[in-house]
Amino acid sequence: MVAGVALGSAAPELSVQLAVVSNIFLRLVKSIIAPILLGLLVSAFGGAASLRGLGRLGWKSLLYFEVMTTIALLMGWGAVMLVRPGDGISLGAQTSQAAKAPGFGETLERSVPNSIFDSMARGDVLQIVVFCLLFGIAANAIGEKARPVLSLAESLSAVAFRYTHFVMCLAPPAVFCAMAATVGENGFGVLSALGKLVATAYVTQALYAILVLGGVLVLFRVPVRRFVDAAKEPFFIAFGTTSSAAALPKALENMAEFGVPKQVLGLVMPLGLSFNLAGSTLHLAMATLFVAQAAGMHLSFTSQAMILLTLKLTSKGVAGIPRANFIVLSALFPAYGIPMEGLPVLLGVDAVIDMIRTGVNILGHCVAPVVITRWEGQPFSFEVHNLDAKR
Image (cartoon, rainbow, N blue to C red; front, side, top):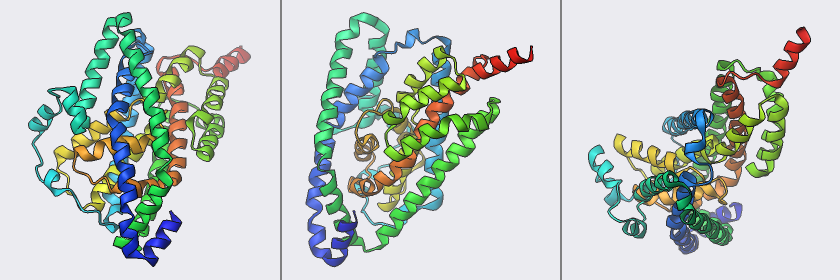
């Protein structure tokens, strides 16, 4: 990123020509969007953890996940609306698409596909999501007969992951060329905007962790100091490695030592890996509005509502994809006329934001089983021991 900035300032005319490299990278990313969504969402909604078999505990968990990720989504969107970090960049809006601003009824009608193959060919992400949602639920409803279809979806996901891994090998030169071209065209003002985005991301993620997650712990009468002692190590592992997978074993171990019953921990935390990505969801909202601001777009209320709804759906089950947030945004932007040129710019600061984003994801994974335990009216093991000691 630094080298790209230096080249952009030293040779702006040459740097602008380098945009072809980032454009090739974007075309490769767009080529895998439909297979990734089809494989992931069908397997997520119809797959391993049968919705029929979740029971009361599972449905409480899903309700909790949806409430928490919705709050995160709205916080991320609201933070960028307030700070407006994208105003320092000029990307150029795709006004031909953005100016149509269809009404809610028309948007709702357009979200239903005539043909999934037509939707995939046009890259209409909302239609793909709606189809996968209904198709996955239908597969879940018929049970074992759908196993070959779900196996195919899982295989498609595995191939898509590897394809994405190959494409992401081109990310470093794409970021270099994109930053050089952006600085060459817009000057150093772009760096101020990116710095403001990073600062806004850290502050908003911290506020979500303290006010929302902390508030939920207080609301459910969880001993906060004891919880912080149990959750801080998984958080720092996730923050340092930017990997939820690296922090997950310690999170499971510490929450078990905290006193979460095994039947709660065994269901809630694995389920949360797909449905409780609050840090990632918050970032998706911030990144989307940031690029829209940089493009000078004025989104209608209907467009904003549909973007947020699409982000809610497309963020499910993508935890295993490298640069998962980048893939989700790549799917979203063309559907709403947001310039794809903003993606390499975001990728340039993604590694910095990824630390706090992953850390908040892990904190959310730790809070969820604790809250569900309280909601179920079950005691923590240390409370049982204290009660026995008093007797």
